[in-house]
Length: 329
Image (cartoon, rainbow, N blue to C red; front, side, top):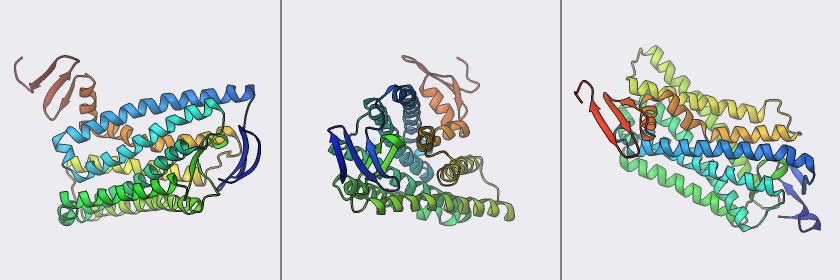
């Protein structure tokens, strides 16, 4: 990073892509603590809750024999995996905010590298999920061939390679993504040669995700309408589930790019960061709200009585009872 000025070990000026030169420390008075501590508490509560929910949903998707064999749920699991990584990294903002000092050392660069790599990988998987839905419904006769077990391993391997490349570029100085206190979110340091490139690529992938999700669902519902196609209940729920996630992605993108958010105010940039946190948590929330099987299995995993595929299940800390419908206890 290029330091344009240094007045003390904790006061310096740094330049960020799309932001310009920022002087640190930003705040060192009572106003800082009155505003930033509530921000930090909100981030802590929000991320902790959705990390737990993500783990519960991922556990269901990877252990339920009916869900884990479906390619769409395999992709959703990977999306949730990268979302959970980002939620953990969002939690580091609690430390950065409360510490109120610039942190630009290798551990901070490594955290930013993992964040950037996970964000890019999640967006690619989101596009892949919409491709999966489009082919599975409109070109269903090719679905089993395109999304067979061997091909899915290849697709996921490619995503993991992309993750490693982006992480490497950020961790070893070709680009830098660090937490920027005045903006309460992650930004690219302008002094690194590939920062602007990776920022542009990330923005372009996000736009592709939004545009392709709109295109895919337009084709899907046009096909259903004009072909009078009937989806199974499972396919219908899955399609609505993915559609709702895509709708939020569109809303999130439009919020960042076009809504008159007061970016010049701390509350404005914090709202922008909250949109990112919601982006990383919306999947698990919608899965539970829309998909009754996932919802019932999640509730069962925390000890709530529920019905899953004709079975009444109750899971407690020491007792698990399964009763077939109509059977006598």
